[in-house]
Image (cartoon, rainbow, N blue to C red; front, side):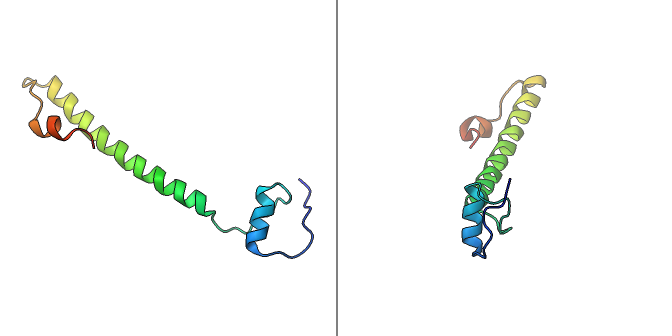
Length: 79
C-alpha cells in the first residue's frame, strides 16, 4: 500500500486515514471500539468458564452412583 498521506496530521486523523486505507501507518493507540469488544469477549469467556464448570459437575453426578442432580444446580441454572 502506498502512503498517500505525506503531511503531518494528528493521531486521530492518522487513525482515520489508516482505517480508510490511505496510509499503512497508524498512531499505535488502541481503538476504543476494539477495547470495548475485548472487554465483551472477556465477559463472554468468564460466562463460558462458569457454564463449563456447571456442565462438568452435572456430568460427574450423572456418571456417579447417585444420579441425583444437586438442587443448587437445578434452581440456579447456568447464569
